[in-house]
Amino acid sequence: MQLKVLLVDDEDICLEDLKSSLNMFKYIDVVAEATTGSDAIKFLQNNEKKVDLIFLDIEIKDINGFDLAKHIRSVYPYIKIIFLTGHVGFALKGYEFQPVDFLTKPINIIRLEESLSRVKSLKLNEKVDKEIKIGIHVEGGLEIIAVKDILYIEKKGRKVYIVCNNCAVYNSRDSVQKLESIFRNYGFFRCHQSFLIPINKIKRISSDEFTRAYIAQLEGVKESIPISREKYNELKELLKNKEMEFYL
Image (spheres, rainbow, N blue to C red):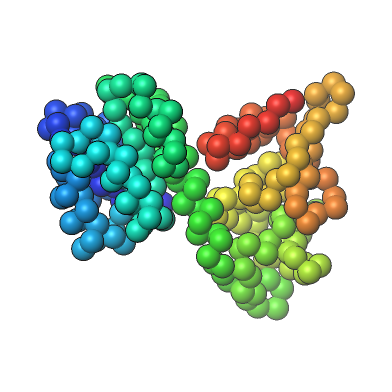
């Protein structure tokens, strides 16, 4: 997934430093830079569909960064915002405008990567919510399935089943590995060698008393889905990137 990014900062040095850091991420495409709030607004008016994410400095000269953020949230609610500032004290007020994150200058590359991962997760969830449908090879032909209807995917013996809402079950001719590569882009996670699950349907994760095994409870699913021990920490990080927290 490519993220199209607009940079808004009135300091050329800061813009160059940010661009240099973003160049480390192949999925980032910096489509434009603006040194004033007015320039940012003009660009969005003519290119709104070209922007997924805005890095917005709070202290730009012509328009207060928070005022600009309020405008963006109102007119372009699908565009994500990451605030930039040299003053940590702005953070508390900044979260009123629902940014993905709040980064202080100079930008820490690890914090930047965490922020970008969060944006990617949010965008993938939005894709699924738009009723995306995928053609899957099944016994007898091709089945068109809405991604949001899939409860989980399970391998039993040599067969792979796609379990959906309304008790629909499809016998896929594709391997779990191939389905994993397809559905990874739609928020699915391979929690076990035999299971793929949609992360946004997880409602509970629990362990046995010795913490030797984990299981997931999914929305609309009575059965417990196993989570392998080596996959547990990876899943926990993915959930954190979606701004979730859980404790075991």
